[in-house]
Image 1 (cartoon, helix red, strand yellow):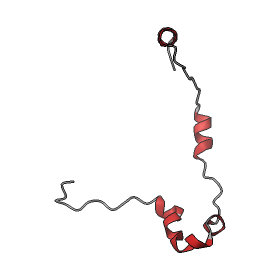
Image 2 (cartoon, rainbow, N blue to C red; image 1 turned 45 degrees about the horizontal axis):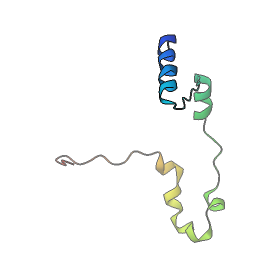
Image 3 (spheres, rainbow, N blue to C red; image 1 turned 90 degrees about the vertical axis):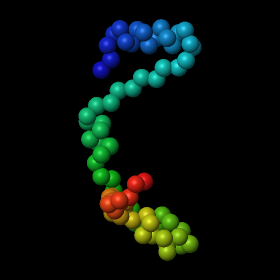
Image 4 (tube, helix red, strand yellow; image 1 turned 90 degrees about the horizontal axis):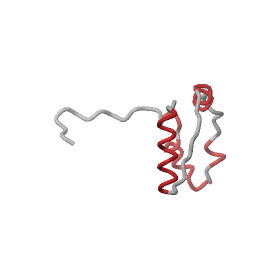
Length: 76
């Protein structure tokens, strides 16, 4: 939420600098709708035959896993 004073200052700065201001509204309903899992498609139908040997790279379940943690003593 934005206060009226902040909005007024924002508009005045816009008029001084002649820059475009873009405002948008987002709600929890929109966020929940975006987070609902979407229908998964078969990767073989999307990728050309040339890339079928790399299907494991595009595996959705593998991308959701966390990477391995660094070993103790790693300083970078």
